[in-house]
Every structure is written in C-alpha cells, then in structure tokens.
Image 1 (spheres, one colour):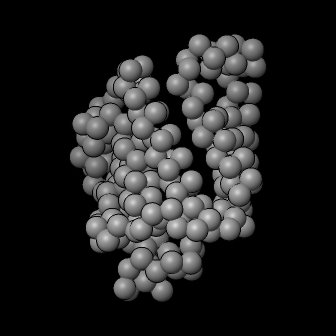
Image 2 (cartoon, rainbow, N blue to C red):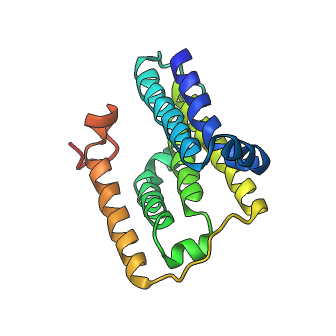
Length: 188
C-alpha cells in the first residue's frame, strides 16, 4: 500500500503546484519554463507508474463500505460523460467554454462513481484521493480564474463527443482485461 500512497502523493502533489501560483512562479523563475515542465512531467509519470503498480500489488484492504447499486447502474453513462469532458478539455469546444474546467469535472465524476461503486480499502484510497484532488483543484482554478479565452467551434464539440463516447465504450469493453472487473454485460 506504501507504493500506492507514494504514487498518489507524487502525482497529485505535483498537479497541485499550480494551486499555489507564487510557488509555481518561483520554481519557473529558478529553473526556467522548460526545466520546470520537464521535472513536472517526470514526477507526474513516476507518480502514475507508482499508482498503477502500487494499486496492483496492494492488498484489497477489506470492505470500507457497501457498493452503491445506483453508482454501478449509472457508471457506464457517467464514464461516457467523463470521457467526453476529458476530450473537450483539450479542444476549442463550447463544452469547455460553458463548463470552464471540464477535465476536473470529468475527473470528479470518474472518481466519485468509481468510489461509490467499489467500497474496498485500496479503491477508496485511490478514488477518494482523486476526488479530493479534483474538488481542490477545481476550487483553486475558479478562484484563480485560470480559464483561457479562445473561439469555440461546433466541429470541435462533435469530435470531443464522438471520441469521448468511443473511448468510453472501448474502455468498458476491455475493462475486465485491463482492471479485472467486468463493468458491462457485453464486455470481454
């Protein structure tokens, strides 16, 4: 479980740096933009790898709470929405204009549904940490007014919706092979 915790601390910790603009500015000033981005990326990738390996090796941790049948039932729809929001976050979409921070909203939906649908100790730690991060970073982003201006196009919205739904269907189809749990009846 220690590897999972270390991975979460590294991955989420480095992603929380922008919530403290003065610290980020000082680091960029000391190291330069390119070195800051390189170190940020290295720490994020290392954290993600530790999360993946640590989660796989961690004991289940026992049941913390009973799985929510409602969360299990809405999970496929919620995941499709999450993946659309993930796609829209990096495109010039109306979705991004309307929601301002679709990546964090998508992450919050993903984490909340997985948290409520699971209930095991290590899953509660993983999804609870990502949910807490999404909420904290969303509050910080709104307070910092960190949205960028751009001109959205409906073509980008269509691409985000189609690609998000297709990727969600692909993940659901192979979720059992990837994560060990079948989440849809038609999955492999």
